[in-house]
Length: 95
Image (cartoon, rainbow, N blue to C red; front, side, top):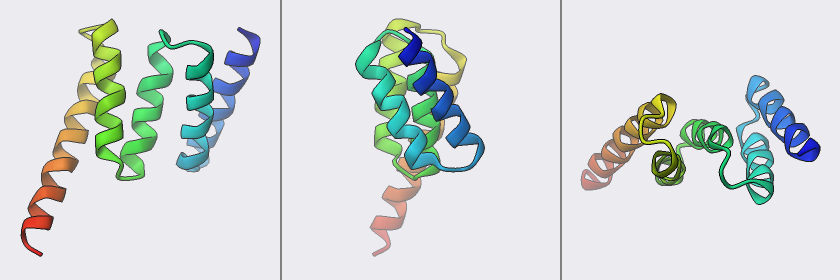
């Protein structure tokens, strides 16, 4: 559990510095230790949104909502992911 907390804190520090790829990697390592901790999924979803990885963000939020169906961060970030996917689809249609 100590390693989990350390990795999560490192991920949080990377987010504060705007290093979203590194933060997502730290949260991914956390998930190997605990798949039920919703916070790391919503945090990684935030990173994916910042990296324009909308499908990955949606998947993380979907995972959280299977565990906690009223998790506000997961609902909000999934909505942002859907919005990003719609914009991307419209842009692709114009090509």
